[in-house]
Amino acid sequence: MPRHLDHWTLLGCGALGGVLAGLLAEAGNQVSLLRTNDAEVRLPLQLSWWDLQGHEHHFEPDFLQTKDAANIRLLLVTTKAYQVQSALEPLIGQLPSATPILLLHNGMGTESWVRRAFPDNPLLLMVTSNGALRLGSEAFRHTGAGETWIGPANAAARAWQPLAELLARALPHAGWSEAIHHKQWEKLVINAVINPLTALSGERNGSLLQRQDEVEALCEELLPLLQRHGLSGDLTFWRDKVLQVARLTADNYSSMQQDLACGRPSEIDFITGFVLREAQEAKLHLPLHQQLYQAIKAKETP
Image (cartoon, rainbow, N blue to C red; front, top):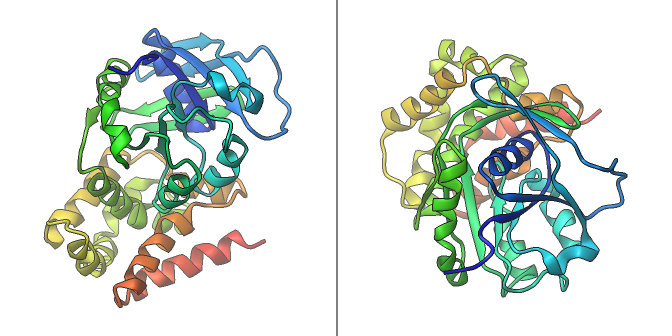
């Protein structure tokens, strides 16, 4: 069994990263935050987070920099998808080849670069539906329980299946999936519908319960692509899956809505953009998703 299963290093501490850091620390794990750029950090780090019952917690994670890479035993990357490459590049040749890398972000499309940059490292993919909100630079709130799945992206990662059990002690749910790419695609469909629609309207996720025709049309357009990637399920299955998430997170704003509202770049290129690239390769046309992509890109441009 792999060692060092209780020492997590997180690269990226946004809403979800902050909540995960808090949950892991509360469960007795040693937690470090890694910064690979030159941004200033006020030490000691003192983070606050609120759990699902509204209880406030405080903890002080260790702070690591690129020069400390040799000491990293588990690396959980929770940056935005478009930040993955720039955040990991300083670690090339520095991170021990035995250290597993877990990628957790919305969308798809970063895996191939990480495979090339860290060919010998165990690479795991992680998907979660937990809700999180960033209240400030050092304050976070867990806003919703959800499922978490991890699975192998290369052969070396299969030895790290015990990580799922460890995560299950800290999170509301965690499990191992050999079909992790299917889990990614399921999350991608949900994100490709909910995120751009709510980002453009500026409304909460629950608003889509009054826009079920649009949700259904977007799901229907994706069906040939999903079938090509081995995902079963008819139109009713996918429409209901998206609406279920919209219902469960009705009071939440999507991450894309929050990004655009705060003037930050969105992950549209790794959500709808990824879908469109896959469709182009399959010679499929997705005009509704293309319109959403262009509308978000236009809104991102000052």
